[in-house]
Length: 601
Ligand code: FES
Ligand code: MG
Image: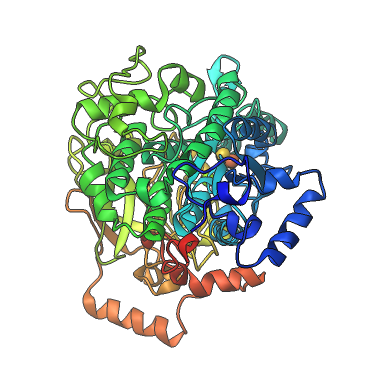
């Protein structure tokens, strides 16, 4: 194959003499007519023919920020510095919009859009003249959607997080975005504050541009993108308004050009070793219960074997090192100033818990990136030998109620342990009667109804909230007790459900239950008053009703045509429900998984 230098005198030759992917559009030997046509339209806003035919790497900037996606909106500014980085490293930038995903305002739930944004990005990366891409991430599902697409297409790709907001405060107390909502709802439900005060209280969690400043799903997924090797080391935790964030945007732009020259693709970075590092890191930061869904989805799209058993086996025994809300006390600014993710990974590396040789986007290994970068602030980032909590990872539970569900153990409070566990010193068992809700609307309607049989020993069950039942799976499993119990100081009850829960929730729920009620799971046959045995040590949740009765109820359910959810409201909801797997399988589009490395097709 001819190199670009022989085609265009004085052009920048891709190192190694390799003809880049964009040459299929802008320097086609076989079809100059099409090349002329492709080039013609990109000239119309001021690009020159020399630039387009120079053979320089063409880099996409996948812009996820907009007015309706405020968490990522600061990327409209950051993208300018990404461009400058691309340009100064000898590349050409093409910025384009991605499907917006705004966690807090998208109805019925933002998670419905993860797979839609994924599909859209796959088409763009596959079909346009791009040699590499900078993925502008931030709000919860924007990061997994981008990384899933990068995995499928497999062109050089790097993430740039928008960064967390500055710390929020109520008077002198830290107010974490997302978190203040839970506390505010309790205060409002208990009649301690009025509606105006409630809205004002919640607003204090969001004092600047950026994504949630707690270790919710946004901070988690961006930390994990860095742990995976797909973002520059030290980049994830930089608060959005800090100057380092803008500098990092420039460096990320420079770096992607180098990655294209080195032909460093997602499949070189997103390996089994890298995913193991992600699982271990997630425990140490007290990461979101959404992480296994999204990380398992990425693994599926890149073709790496990863299951929820890996999360329990590799992740459960890792300690919690980061003192950040919801598992701890602080917010994003302290996390960053104490050393950010490299300081946490340095602890894990020294303890022998990381796969040190995993390659990252800067061309170095994890070990080369983080060794020795221990934190100077031990209140925020603890030493491995002196953690906030031992054994702080997720449990993977099975049993007769579902085939698979997870529980985040680092948010199980001492009061919860004392009240419910047979032996509070140990993660072991409890039995109790359930109160069952059919989706969040039913919960809100019946919670405070005196006829609803909730007492301080109840297990609250949420069903109809999984990927099919509530298209996209609602973040509603963390349920607060009724106002009359809140007024008695009972602020939490055990919750179980087939939905998800917010990454900012501190609730010790058993969630992501698969199969969900709407997919034929046994949650569909539970009734108020049924008893469950939850044995955390044995990793089981079982229904304490006899087999004959179980059979009768299953037959009944079948005769009724199964557990049905609401009507589809949009064409995408229908496609999503027809195509999507359960939460334990990463909620991916089943038919999408076979399209791997499409850039090579
Ligand atoms: Fe967007 Fe939390 S709502 S990051
Ligand atoms: Mg959320």
